[in-house]
Length: 143
Image (cartoon, rainbow, N blue to C red; front, side, top):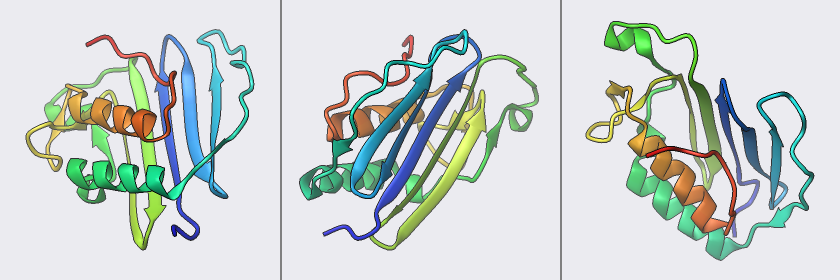
């Protein structure tokens, strides 16, 4: 049993849907806005079962999110991008915590302690959350 498990995943592209998924009180809650600021249709919270949390924790372990840096920024790569995507992920599950995010920069696929313009590891995080809770829509990526 996961007592007080929580997470929050936010994806905020400059153009397109802004979305947020939260696990709170054993329910997944979805919020979002179209690029123009209109709210996305409300959805019923999804009850989170232990088997789903088991799958999520296994994926988080595989992706090594517990060791991701707190902030990924393009300045680490010698540049600055003013439009694009900001994102954040925080989790507190089974006594483990992480809090991470980025502005147009992501953990490198090869090494989560390195910063990259490529979002592969972050995309896997989104896929892991979607898969664990059978969520159809969250953050559209063009890969």
